[in-house]
Picture 1 (tube, rainbow, N blue to C red):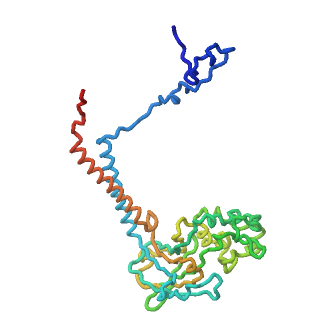
Picture 2: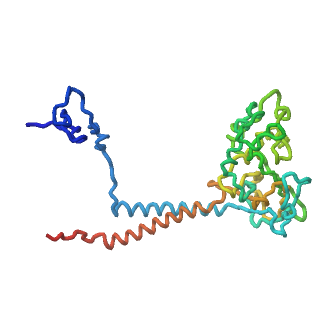
Picture 3: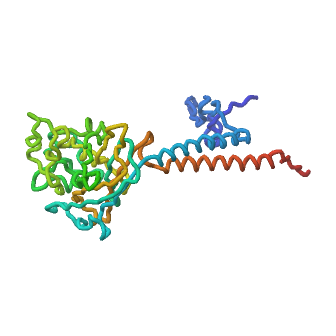
Length: 373
């Protein structure tokens, strides 16, 4: 006699159609609920699958191939990084012998501004275009409240946000009952040292042309940051009714004399507003373009750096630096990437050799064992 299977019997221990007392279920016409998955390839786990079998014939070539690829790439990146010229000057002035020591305790509103000059010598010429950076240490631009302290609508030229900034900007939202433009802690702490570079030859100083445009990202300059709109292009009138950030010596519409680099679209301001991820960082300050293929951009010799020291860092044990650097196809100087490739490639190649020796010595051994009766 055939017996029909029912998942209900597994679920509650009773045959389908029978009540708890053994009698037939009353009105047994309803469908029996079941937790059995549908009979499909997906739910029954019958889909085709591929599981690699790790053998000496597949693992050993993989280690050797990775090693042979990574090591040359690492050497190439490392050599390229070492060919990048870079020169760095710390002008914080902590050392008593530093020319900028007299400016160490400068404040945001120091009048007149403190100035100092540092003389230095370039041992090697800088052949291609040179990028001048300013660097800060122990400055945490990645703090959550600091990163949020801005109004992107205001920076994008929205007129309503200009006069009514976001509450995220507190406590740098208003000052003397006037809205601050630009508001927030990021804008309020904008770097404002002035750096000027001179080439010294026979006691004669020749100014190096520093280009202030083209240092910001194109998307930032043309999309994210815009000046308010209104009748005419008079920024003084467009920013009427607002006030400057607390730590700024002048309002935003006086950052530059050129209209296409003034207000919210000032490139020094845009570069600063792109916050750094680590407490030690550098930001692009100026460009030095190569004028002739026959002469280097910065030839070896004596130089002097004139600094208008406005930005205080001593209160939070910070440091300030000026960096001159060339770049390559991989960007700025960064030996870590090349070292990482060489290290990983060497480890893989070494493991391949070790595993090859082990396989050659023990791979043919009979691993079967006699099982006693």
